[in-house]
Length: 198
Image (cartoon, rainbow, N blue to C red; front, side, top):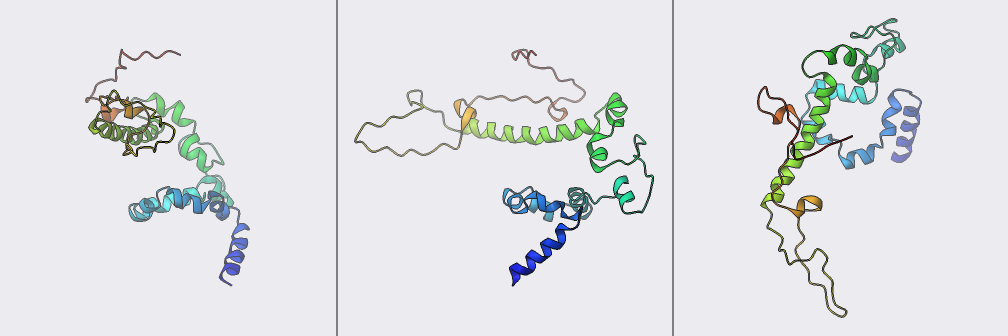
């Protein structure tokens, strides 16, 4: 009976164009992979949570939604003045940003968002480099592949937490071209030891 009621509710939800978009997320998979549900539910402010949920379901009061809801007819983009703009235009596609804002000195909104993603990656890499630096050295005579003679049992070894490239050395140094990793008012200088060509 409960399963039947849930199926009826989903059939009704599928009839709504905008509100049904969450069904395409693969909600079960998303919760298992944890897009940040614990963070969203317990660490976001009420306004930020409302914005995140409304942006995911495209129910923010964007000009195209205001027109669809018959609240306003000719609402324009506040930056470029374009009509009938969508959520993706506002969040990532307004031509005013690359044509005007990016020419101003300082960090524009796209670079800021890009740098924040890189900052999270950089922090994770630095954390792993610290773990690699504290790990015991692998003995030079230890082979990477340990063969077992026929008829002998394999000796169990304690698996290392380090995997991949970081496990091969203990003296890693990482540099990131991000404002947070530079001295105040200094430009980043790419290391001369590293040659990059196109």
